[in-house]
Length: 311
Image 1: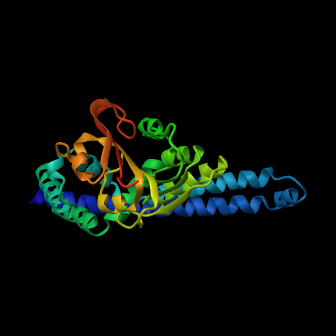
Image 2: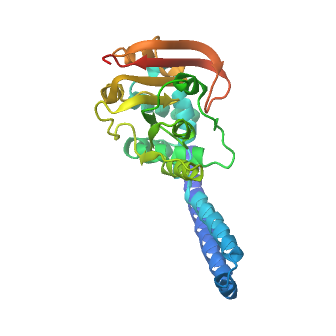
Image 3: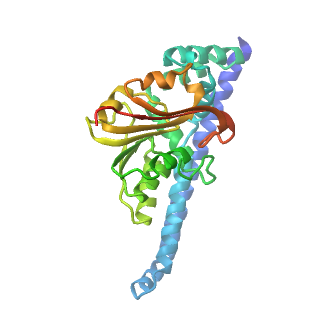
């Protein structure tokens, strides 16, 4: 008990220390930037006379400082979540059916590892009450990393599916930074994508504009997005769990297709086929192959191309 109390006190001391560090760094950044702008007042006149180099540099520095403040603002409150998420998705599919049961397993694991009771309670409370924020923060960090840990090229299975297929209206579920959204737009599709990671969605829009493309985007979770009825010729789930299947199927036009690729571990035996049993299966693959996205190693992968009857 004494060791546990000492650990809790140590954690509280560390949190106070890092809060002060973050505060001082924020003040230093703001103060330093203000002084820099003051020194450049005369150069502003030069810009007005035709030279934009100074303010181009100012814009670059401002962007860098804002990024630094953003990174500092990612205070340790959510830092446990990436590790939890990796552990969560490594569980067998039958142990991930209920999020509450997952939390109970996680609680037991933390207790076994000797994590203080206060810290366990803090994490569980965050995941029960602020899960949307945790997910958005996780994916924003993931997609805006200066060294991407994911494949930035279009999904090869999607590319093979749309080859020779007339363009129509497409929906990219969990679009991330837009690698597949932009690919479809380049192929002439009228594309909409959504994702809870707002910074990733903004990055996709920026890249699309640089390429002279138009894409429609929304910052939302799949449970929040309006799939509509008979709207889409193609719905893509590229390494995105199919959580809203009934609404997706309703959103497809007759003859519309669902394209899915992801790890087999997300599903029980033939679980992906059962989820889309209202559609006609055109192509199904279940094999060990190199992961296309955030797991770029040999893993069991399932792929599905299925069509809505009625055309």
